[in-house]
Length: 147
Ligand SMILES: [Cu+2]
Image (cartoon, helix red, strand yellow):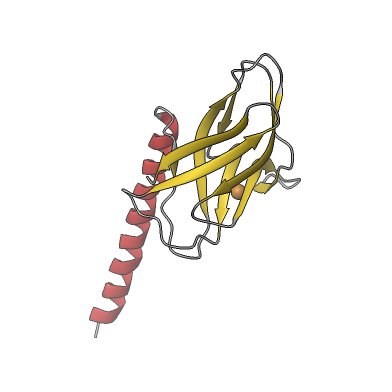
């Protein structure tokens, strides 16, 4: 008679432990060194790309476009705080990098979204990005898929 409720509690407990561990793992990734990567995702899902880009030119440069071999829809997003204190994200239409500066696409900041990916992306796969900058021109970036 009591088996079902206790099983149910075990499942809930398991889920709580699992989500706590996952949160810790994510926190430690953020604290540790920055890893250039694309997040794993199922087919048709949305993933994010995290990487650095250094403007090695003597002038500011503007990102004109960014495309990928895994998704037809790629957007640069920025993370921001909503009026009620929640974290949201929205598309950033213009990215400018000053001369000699590095722009960081990262979790919780500016990031690149790969929307509606054509196939699932798992650890061991890699993703090709192509940026077009106003001055630097085409810049290709190959990123590993990693959580
Ligand atoms: Cu986003």
